Image (cartoon, rainbow, N blue to C red):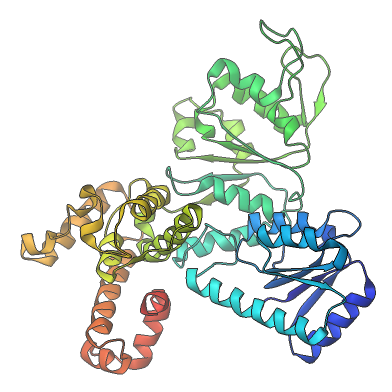
Length: 465
């Protein structure tokens, strides 16, 4: 379990809490300012936070806001003097778990921290939260590789190229790389190079001087200047016009750039992270992308797998997105029926994670019942509901899916389909035995330890619960 963070500029308050938590066998870490704690968020995360409001530097309320933007499930206990009760009430309404008016009873404080710890553990278990970063979830080996890469790059300023189909979460990974980097306190600026007209993109990136062209009535700071000291994320880099590729290469080569119409060089201190759904090597061969720029950008490459290559993550993601939509809409969270999760896990999701998230948002709004069955799905998602019954032969359905995967050029086909096959067998056996593992293992013809290991490997603990 992660530690409790104590944030207070008063050494005596920190000392009392430290001694009491130590006696209660509760791990802790202390900070004398919210600034120190905020810096620590780039490489660490608490289970619970106990923070004063008024301190030198940023306030406890500012830290609360920053923490909840990144990790909304972490409980925060705000400490305050009696004269600050109005502020404490505002903090409580803004998301604080509770507030402690000073002076406080230390036993009451420890009990409150225990309650916060219990809530934190419960909430984390409910959504299967991954510690790397909210919204990037997955048990699949390919996603674990991405998580490990984010961890390895946490102290790096290296240029990163993210490859992945549309909707796989490339910007989320870019934000995670920034959040877990030494530049975390500086801006993260994102721009989609394919979404901006060619004649405006140069000014958008580098800014312009007054009078540089018709309509340039004032100096404009470009995205490079806005990202100073931080990270600039260039999405869909493969669609960047050739003349802009040349300017970007120059910035990466000598670290300087000019505003449009400018004559004074500006020093660039930004980390570049790029992303594309295209095969840049192929575009280089076709003369559509500069080879020297490709090598400048391709320092570290991360590949995000499409959802069809990590179908074992669909139940985890679907539950998470249902809860996220329920929170956004301030409604009670719905649940998926087991058959619905199995049905969704067999779908391809050409729009990947974004398409699944949109579907879950639609279901939160449109489904009348609390338990979502296959019949509640939009018509286009119910088309394959009875494919096996229609064919009369499940192996022919499997053959069709394998052929489709081969035509797409998918990788790791054997691992993916074997995992789906084992998942279906185990879930059906457990459902038949009402969760009794020994009986299910006997019916499947495997040992109980083997069944337990496969449940863990396939990430079925959450579904079983």
